[in-house]
Image (tube, rainbow, N blue to C red):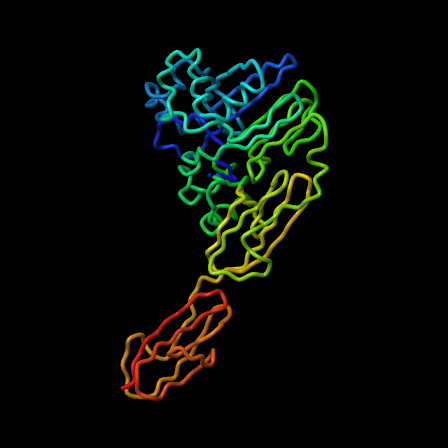
Length: 382
């Protein structure tokens, strides 16, 4: 599965073409009291599914170079191969740079490596985060959307779902999500595990994740729709927020042939739901003819809703076939699946439901519905 979600997995991508699910990653950041920081990265591959594939990757992947510690871990009823590596940094700024700048990230991975030549953009597709604010009291990080190859391998319908740089097609993903209740349920059903955490020297006071003392964590169930992780040890960044998310691109009760919408918030978009099902993306497009209700909530519980209808079906013109020539009057009937706006014959408006043409000549009939879909028919009366 972005994208929920969320194209959050594998910043270090194996060159393996048969990845099909049952995998995960764990990213942990620690800020020490002396200012130093630790970054721990762990990849997980379900043992039975990936045994052969991993064996084939031994000579190609940094995971087998000796830089990563290999182990086995059981989660639920699945046993995973795990590959872990820990990096230390002299300061929060140094870690922030490495985790947001691809060149710096690759260079840091090369340091102390048994085989540094393996660390190239062919293997490391992106940094863990696209943006990071990090100091002794505040952590705000946006997860990168560049690891979509992992989610797309699980289902071609989900290719863009967790990539917030693209618009997720609601129609393409809804069947997958509805059967599982949400994007989170879909990820879980595929054996996808996603975990992020940050630990401060002092207790966390606010977070859009789960708080446990000095640690804030996010899992498959709690990663926000905008992929922004927030944790603070002082102040009230989240609870002071009284502004609801903004849903732009569509108007409430609007009618569209197709729709693109974006959800934003001054602090954090926690969830976005379409017709009650949580979608792990803040950019959505809808082209299937139906009514949509979008509900967006931020981390403090402020909620916005908008409902709109998409009608992508052209009106139907009955009474004669397109291009046909006849010698008698023609009675035309017009019908639309939602609402007809206008009908013209040779540019002149006629009744939206029925019209009869008697005189000889060439006729161009156009029927336009309220969403802007147009049907055209041409015929002749001799």
